[in-house]
Image 1: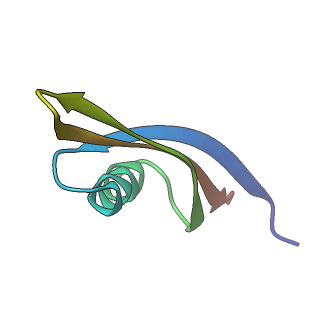
Image 2 (image 1 turned 180 degrees about the horizontal axis):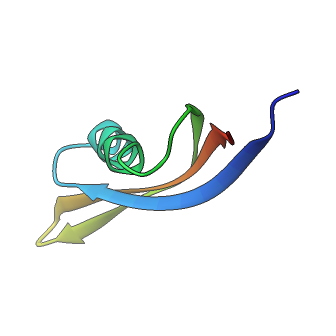
Length: 66
C-alpha cells in the first residue's frame, strides 16, 4: 500500500499559469521524490497599467512517501 502526502505550493511566472505550474513542479522535484500529480487550486494575476504582469498559481502537490 502506498502512502501519499499533499503539500501546498505557490508559484508565479511572467508568461502564463501553465509556466508557473511547470516552474513549481521543477522546483519541488529538487527536494521531493515520486511526485504523482498537481492540482491547481487557485489562479490569480497581477495587473499594472492595465496589463497582466504576473501569473500566480496555488498548487496542491501529491507525492508518494518512501
